[in-house]
Length: 216
Image (cartoon, rainbow, N blue to C red):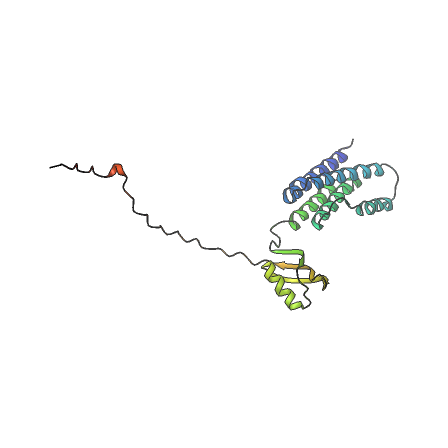
């Protein structure tokens, strides 16, 4: 086994570990997709290395990438963020399997992919911007009234609204809404006032002894 191949394998294993455990799992906490990302990366790496050992054209490699790119997990819903991790793990495995020259290309491009995912999936990037699909319990056809209703429900500034369905029979409206929450205001802490303590009732043991009545 050549030194170049060892460097490539080590780079891929470190990169997929950082991507799957260091970035994805710590932020999204889905163990099932963690396994899928690692298995996909290692599988693509193994197949690409096997194909690289025989005389194949670049068209076959691109066809392999195209076939793998259309694989979707049908058993559960995955978000667009998780699809991004899915393609990144695929790209890391394919990049390491192709082993482009010179040898530093694989570590450099793998590091670039990890830095991109670190930045674009950071919780510090546009933390107040959100997107949801909402079902309102009334049919609203007026765009201004719809924006006002969504602003009241979300307590946020609505930036874009796309009406998906308006059912006048069931009196519901389904919308895809993008909104931005207002910046949280710092509330100055006010020291609590000390409440006056109630007067302490003396215990029977604290009372002076009663004088004995002397009978005449």
